[in-house]
Image 1 (cartoon, rainbow, N blue to C red):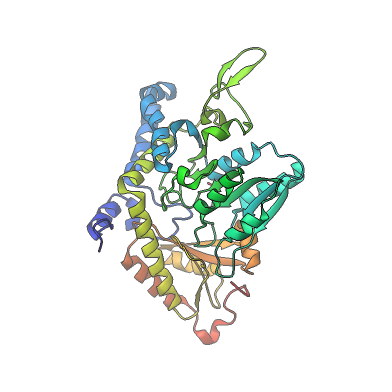
Image 2 (cartoon, helix red, strand yellow):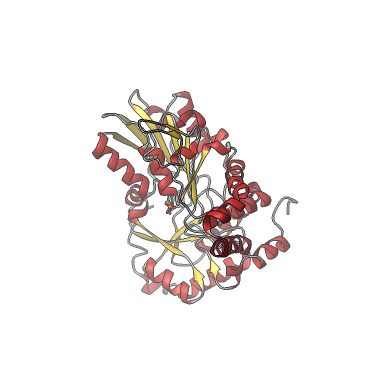
Length: 412
Ligand SMILES: Cc1ncc(COP(=O)(O)O)c(C=O)c1O
């Protein structure tokens, strides 16, 4: 074992400081992970203070701490605090960035087959409202994003490259740095959906070279639900049209005009949960303290072990393909609907989720997948939990003779 790896005693400590780990085997971290007790307590304490002292008065007392959250996020992704806007979820962040682009009819967006439904809807809406064109780069036969196909697809009409780092319904990691190099070389705006990767993979917006990056808090970052942020590079801020303003997103306003703030905060509105903002900050602080490289290594190790053990269970088919895989493990069970697998595991105190076609429509259709099971591991999960999970699954898998077709899919 390498000295930088997370040791069993450290995992034990982290689990002891996470109430939920004693209740369930939580393999739904790609849905919403278990927050650390300190994060939950930070939110509760703040709400209690608000109830006693008043919302505005409490905010004034915590002004420095609230402001510091931007600095923490900036450290997490190697950005500047004035390049961060807080939002409630990744969809809002992504839509603020995408819809802020002044698309002209015929402008082209290039994307991957792994896009989440929000992004897919954004593209379709852009087609409808601005007559944009969409080019989807299919994965190659091994399940990897095809960089050469991207390079070939670029033309003078290409306005945006929009890529999901880690998809919702598969375990592959897209090569966002290499894609960024191509975007930079052609001077094309580059939007990254890092909803599933933040908190599980090290992110560096300078290394990625993206102009915008959208994130949610509740997944691998272990922040409370209803938190997120969007990064907008300083040089891209004036290229995007804010969709709305309030009195706090402007530097000045008069009867006849206004001046927007000279920072990403021009894309935010004033009213938001200060308690949740501090909770987000606590979660980011913990991720920074643990180190994203260590977190990533542990998650990738656990997920690889889970995939290997799943593949050995008769009737189970793992779907993840590609050179680089992360903490999301997707599979089907022969003769048992994904919904039933999930419900049966839940009765046995194991949380997983399912992914339907609509979540990642192009990929799911491309591979003829209908509904699949998603087991997503975090660093606080353990080898023992993986063994219990696999033993439980093996016990509920229908006997091969009774199994019938493996899943409502013909490929992948
Ligand atoms: C890859 C990906 N992008 C975006 C989103 C949307 O995130 P949110 O629900 O926070 O808007 C999700 C949610 O599951 C996702 O998996």
